[in-house]
Length: 284
Image 1 (cartoon, rainbow, N blue to C red):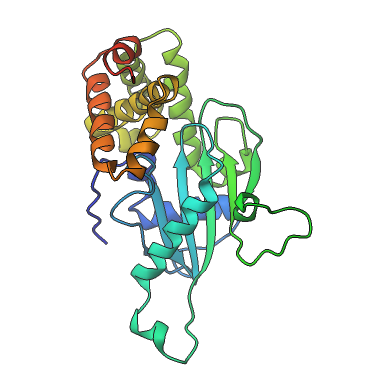
Image 2 (tube, rainbow, N blue to C red):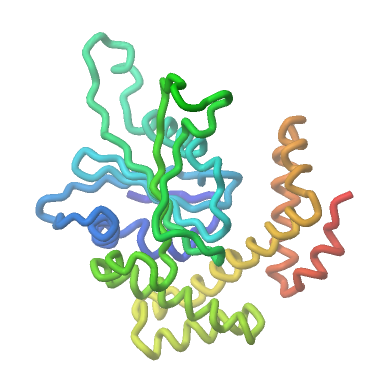
């Protein structure tokens, strides 16, 4: 299936998102399954636009009647993720289901959903945790009637966490190693240097060797953009821009705010520092 993504993929999505063999490997690792290409039918259902304001990359697929929505998240875990997933799953069902059949009297069969976030940010979190939509309901508490529920499973995929995943997926193991190399290099190098050195060192050691050789330039650009986004997010938070974005969205100015985010990212992409960006884009 050819997907026309509006914005560049993340390295994670590039690595796993379009290859049914890699998707199956990742599924088996996360769900402790033992499916093979002979007994697993996969249909990629990833939407053409991403989950939230074009920043979070997703992979979604139907496998043997189960619909899996999987998000790779490199920044702080957001407590609103269950609500985002609810909006997202509705869009996927709308995409894969026959609209006319919904108005017929015969009950439809739809794939049962699973919601997974794979976290590899810098903040320390438990190896696994659960987030529930019901925890977001106003006035909810013990004894409250819950008429709608959605549960998201969050797994830490930083190197050393959930080692059973990497035992079951060599590709995930190598991806974790690659990200850890960048983080280690960042402590003593500029971002571009840290990424370039990690790519070279991992190629030399056989970590994601073929993937990095085939997509070296694209991977470098995607990584710099991903890590620049983290700096941009710091600016929005520190200068109150996030509040301005929310106000702008309420006033129908979402497009303008997204353009502003793009300008911050472009400024960082061109080699400017976080401090320079904060001065240039300070929110008043």
